[in-house]
Amino acid sequence: MKTLQELLDLLHLKKIDDQRFEGQNYMTPWGRVFGGQVLGQALNAAYQTVSEDRLAHSLHGYFILQGKLDLPVHYQVETLRDGKSFTTRRITALQENKAIFVMAVSFQKEQTGIDHQVEKPNVLPPEVLLPDQKQLEYLQKKSPELYTMLTAIRPEILEFRSVEHIDPTSHQPTRPERHVWFRINSAATQLTQAQQHQILAFASDYNLLITAVQPHRGKIKREQMFMASLDHAMWFHRNFSLDQWVLYAIESPSASNARGFANGKIFSQDGALIASVSQEGVIRTHPVN
Image (cartoon, rainbow, N blue to C red):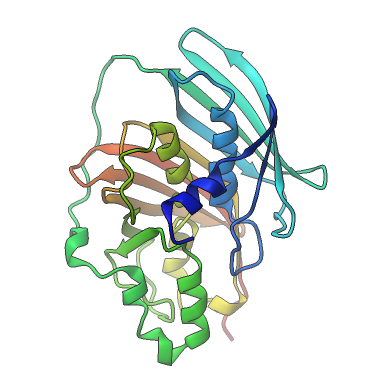
């Protein structure tokens, strides 16, 4: 995807009736439906069933089966509650009449109340960093297949700039932390906050789970590692626009029993905490001989 409109078209679902919707797939190089896609599409389905004065404040999803790229994804929305302040929806994503993903979303009317947040990490700003694609150019000769795969993973409309040096071939263990700036490579001031939420949900699935692998470099073979998301949760704290840089500060406090767990905080460049994310996923490995 090279344009903002292509990304919006992917996330915006065809309405079948008041509670059923259909979506197409982002053609991933790894041959499975991208988790961020179903997160964003399920959120779009839910948004189509609530009034415009409600914004999502949290979502909790479970990935049940791997999605197939050659089949559309159908979304069924259930109305759980329409309250005075809060609205709740449950969404089931299906292929071949089997649930591949389920998610609950809570919406809220804008209200006033207490306000505080943690500080944004003090890291290098995006203006002095190279785009990830540029940081990976050294792989073109060293490992051309890996370079092609890594640069094809992310749509061109999203630009990522990693604070820590990217070296997927390194066998040197590092702390389970990473900081990544990202934004939309297009003016997005015309987008609604609901659309911003859907794009952020899509982008939030990048960089999370791989952070749990960083302390284990040298012990496992990258090419023999299987990773897949199990669940994903998000909380939207403050309004934002993704045509401005945001910082994804990620840490993995635990990995055990073939699962990795990661938390992320997303800050605007001026320091506002706009969202929080948590994810757990399967990480199966073969030890290096």
